Image (cartoon, rainbow, N blue to C red):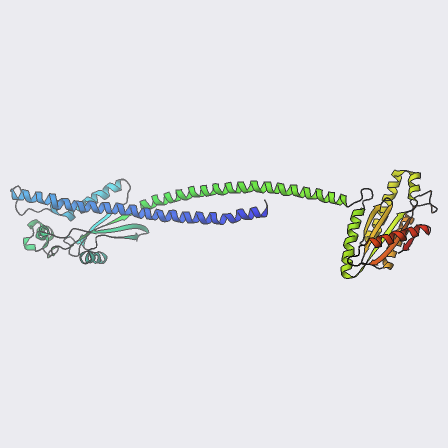
Length: 435
């Protein structure tokens, strides 16, 4: 995969993981809120049941007892907490409820009626409950809730005030002298009396477990997290597949472009290379000479041109044939190439049996030395030529070195090198002449 696509996919992992982490956090936060809300519903429902029980005792059960007493079905002093005490009834109902919950493996719900002046010691308010009672009386607090942690488990604590005392409450809670005889016999005359009317004398509270709802909410959050992970993974996988396909197409295009560039380079090389000898062709020679001439003109330097021609080449072709003539030209080109390339210059086939060399940043002495090396090497190669007075192939060479001038093309240097080459031929061939 191309680096930019690979890096893009790696970079994409960051927002994906960040999004997943944020969603998981949100799920668990919402799950905790849901668990708390469910626990509040459970606790409030239980408290409201207790409150309703109180209401039922006050509005129906007690009046019925009083009616029976008035009709003589019960004696006047009759009093039984089992039938007439709201607290007694509520506490026992809670115990039955917890027994039923235990049968189903549910955690018990802790119910308490709390007061500062309890008739039964188990209803004695602790410091927190006493403070809540004070707020219910002085501030009109109607509900209190908080979360508790007991033995590593979370509970919801919810408290509500019972209804304010009225005239019917005073018989049992004002003075022992007017209290029912059975009440005094059961609880004594030291506690639960001297209450004020229209006061919140007690509160009911419940401690509901959050373990079950927390577990259910956590399971839901984990399920949502898993589903989210699968969805995000699927999305990332689709993106990765899409990017992979794009990458494949782009690499194919790059490969095709590389192949095309290679072909273009080969075509360019072919367009600048002589097919027979492998040397630069005339076009390449002219381009190189023009560039070197311009560079030398900017730096006020000299440029050398070497022109050479294979001696008696027409006779060679007529005698040995054109195929042998081509092989002769290739041999001469190879010799020129080996010598000139070592000098770092450009050899070229200028046309027919004629060759040329661009010699940059030189002087006439260096350029002539290079030309004489070529002349000797061709002669020494001993390529047979029956119609040459030397009995072997030779070359005639013309050399010119000129200072390049801006605006003055190198055509004059070419012309003078060509003239020097013809003087070498007129002087007997197999030699070098300077312009």
